[in-house]
Length: 462
Ligand code: ADP
Ligand code: ASP
Ligand code: MG
Image (cartoon, rainbow, N blue to C red; front, side):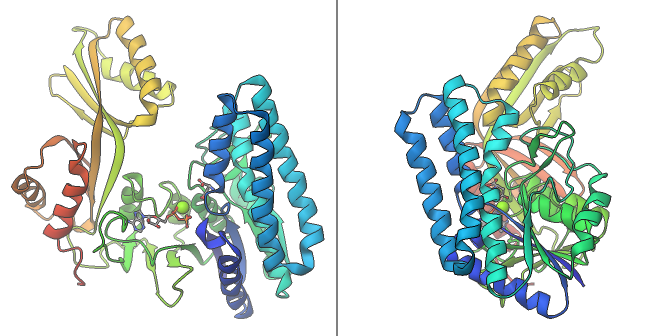
């Protein structure tokens, strides 16, 4: 069997986690499986690199960069010494080259006070360049032949949208040739999160993009399964950090899971499942720290349980844009608005339009407010719209379940339970047959998630 195992940040976050990870890989390899491994950066490393770049651009002192690189070096070398004592000299050299590249790039940012999307991608992809050699050495330390390789060299070719790139189909034959052909003999440890773009630069796949890398590699090598190893027992009925009663879902369809992750379930990257779905490869989500738990199976099958609603998710930092006063007699105003936002790189998560075309409401993330404002100002200046407003203190709650399809009364149940708790709904959008999303004010988000978790008894076993 061909298996792709992806290990997230906490699953490679220290020596003890890496020892667990390599033990699972070894077990699978010794059963005769052909295994490919994809890794994230060690926990928090990507966040730290992003923070450092931001501090540097806004004028950190000269010592800051030295101290930052020293800290990264110490953490990685200390871990390497523990998990692969026989390979310290060889791997430290590799790590040093990468740390020096990172330092040079950050020094250039400091001098130029400029961080382009392309250089930012180069910088933030270094975390995986530091973790992969350590995991690969840890495998060699326990007698398993292994090599480490970048996503780019492994064959991932992207559309070059820096910061949020998507894989192109031409990646698959390249991955089959570069990775597939070597499976069984050695275990590749592939740096997650990034691939190439046509101009040869590195493009990252969006935050949490290593999940996506795992599925792209899975599709490229025609894997029989992809396992996402993380720090929770599986996909849960809601974010366990929000509600203690959240429960693990045994199985869920690709479509339901994609809706969940698009609307805030951070356990998996929102585009990660597309390559697996296209090739019908089952994806398991499992806990590195509780390996006896079977985890969640994500597959094509929809109605694995009889629940109407399977999960509720929440996006906190959202902004409601309301556009009014469309120019009369000017067709295509909605098109102008969405094109302007798309050109500015703004992702519109939800849309609701008044039937008279006199008003459109949209939801975006708070980080994109600045870009959206610039884009809408241009549309206003062109005379297409009169007014727009931004309300940033809103949250998006999303209800997911294939059982909602053709079950009358589900919407009534949702809104009745919100009404009973005096939660005011600002906007509603039924994205698909398996998803209903709505917008509430600031602090009502968690209250709404809790209400629906209770209403549909998601804390109870079937
Ligand atoms: P990794 O580093 O392994 O990729 P992430 O932190 O990206 O891990 O994703 C796992 C985390 O996602 C969990 O620790 C959990 O807090 C969070 N999470 C949010 N929503 C859900 C959900 N519906 N089910 C499971 N975990 C969720
Ligand atoms: N290290 C990257 C991030 O933190 C990718 C990942 O972990 O999946 O976003
Ligand atoms: Mg993740």
